[in-house]
Structures are given as C-alpha cells and as structure tokens.
Length: 191
Image 1 (cartoon, rainbow, N blue to C red):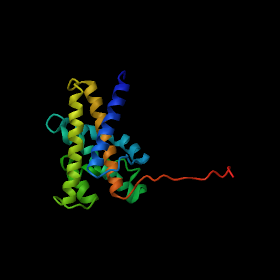
Image 2 (cartoon, rainbow, N blue to C red):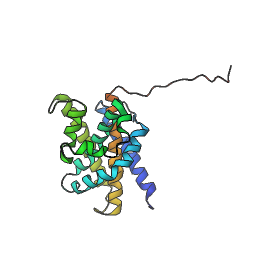
Image 3 (cartoon, one colour):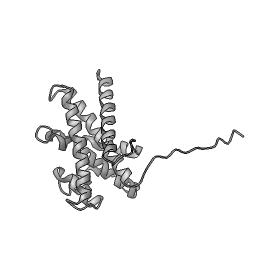
Image 4 (cartoon, rainbow, N blue to C red):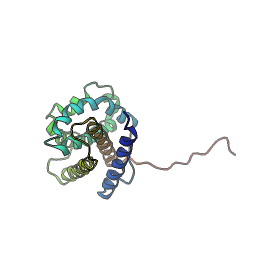
C-alpha cells in the first residue's frame, strides 16, 4: 500500500477532530482512553463488522461508521465487567449483532449492556454523540475527494471506523469512571 502515510495522516487528523468534538460535548477530557486488549479484539472482529457495514455505506453512511463506535462502547463495558469471560470468545461480534440484528445493534448495546432506557435523556445523549462523530467522519471522508468504491475509499472507510471504535471505547471508559492520572514513581537507585 503506497499511500500508507496518507492514510496514517488522515486517521490522526480524524482522531484529533473527534476527540475535540467529544471533549466539547463533555463525554471526553481531551484525551483518548484506551485498553490494549480492546484494540486487539477490534482487529479480530473488524472483518465481520466490515461485512455488515460496507453494504450500508451507500444508503446509511453514518450508520456504517457510527456502529463501530457502539461496538467500542459495548466492548469497553464487557472489559470492565469481566473481560476474562469474554476475551477469548470467537463469536463476540455475534454477541452484539444477533440479538437484534446489525441495524439495531446500537439499541442493544445501550439498553442491554449499559442499562440505558430507550429514548431516555442519557440514551439520546449517547446517540447524539455517536451521530455527531459519524457525521463528522463521513464529512471528512467526502472532503478527501476519493473516488467512490475504489481501494482508497475502502481504506479511508476502514480507518474511519477504527477511529470511531476508539472513540466509543474512550467515551465508555470515561463514563465508567476511568481516567489517566500522572503518577510519579521514585527511582530506588537514586538516593
């Protein structure tokens, strides 16, 4: 892939834009919270996600991107609850999709995993954040001026859903009370 630097720069820019948006919306604190185990799990399930998401691009572009954010939220919740129970499940993607289907995965994750009632204030807040992030991502994709249905279009889409996944993880981890704190560790070799 000769355009790797281009795709890396695009991903970095989208991440910065969405972090700023989420911070402005009050669901992040200007930093991207992450868990390495979740990023590894994303690499495992992304092929299945792409099979469901790519056909949605034409008619539902924001859904095709936003649902990656909901997957991030869902995986972060499972990671917090009992990751040992879920981390080796080869059907984890189906856990999110099969109860209600791909189209309603967002509702399943919010209602069943987060315990947020449909149409409640909290539900609408999370939905609004994910919609804003996805709309911003789709707008950025379009501004790239890449030929639709080309290999480059696929790679930009793949990078976008990866960023949305990370945003979903971060939003969920913050909601669950996680944060980065500066820790000073004394060097025992210095007296």
